[in-house]
Length: 255
Ligand code: BEZ
Image (cartoon, rainbow, N blue to C red; front, side, top):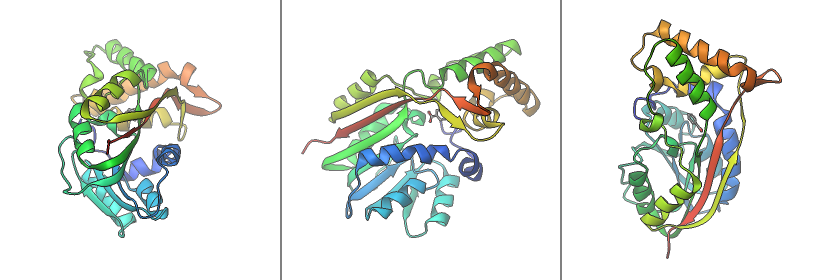
C-alpha cells in the first residue's frame, strides 16, 4: 500500500484531476458549515480542503504521501496539512466531521483506519466518505491479469494493495467500531480519463504495484497489451473510461 502511494503529485494534479472534480458530490453530502472543524482524511494535493475552507470551516488535511502534502502546503499555505498513515495516527484533537474522498480503498487494514477515524471524531460528529466499492475497476484488473499471463508473468491477488468492499461489509466494519451508519450508496460511475493516453496513464500511475518487480521495457509491453484489450469496451467517443464503482457512506459517532 505504501509503495503504491509514492505518486508523482504534479502528474496526479495534471492528469487525474477528475478525482477532486468527482469529490464535489461528496462535499455536498458533507454539508460543511462555517466554524466547523473538519478533517480531510487523504487530502492529496489539497484541492478539496481549499473548497471546504471556502465554506468557513476550519480544515486540516492528512495524507500518507510526502510529495502530495508538500504540494498542498505550497498551494494553500494558509491551511494545515500533515503527513499521516490513516491506520496509525493521532493528531491529539477531535473534529466535527471527517471527510474522505477516493482514499480508503488504499488503506489497509481497514479496521485500523476506521478505529483511527472514530477516535478523531467528537461525539455526534459525522464521517462522510467515498471510495471504490466491490468490483471497482474489475475489468481493468482482469485486462492487466490477462496481459501479465500472456507475457508469462504470475498473477496475484489485488487484496494486498486495493480494498474494494461491498456496502454490507464496510457498514459492518463501521458498526463494529461504534459508528451509526446513516446512508449507504453503492453505484456504477464510469469515469472519463484525461487524454488519448488516459488508460495507459491511469494504469501507470495507480497500478504501479502490478509492475513493481518488472523492468520498465517489459512493464511498457504489459501495459500496452492491457490497453489494447480494453480498447473495444473502454474507449468510446474519443475518450477512455474507467469502470469505477463507488461506495458512498455517511455515518455518525453517537453522542
Ligand atoms: C478509485 O478511485 O476507485 C481508484 C483509483 C486508483 C486505483 C484504484 C481505484
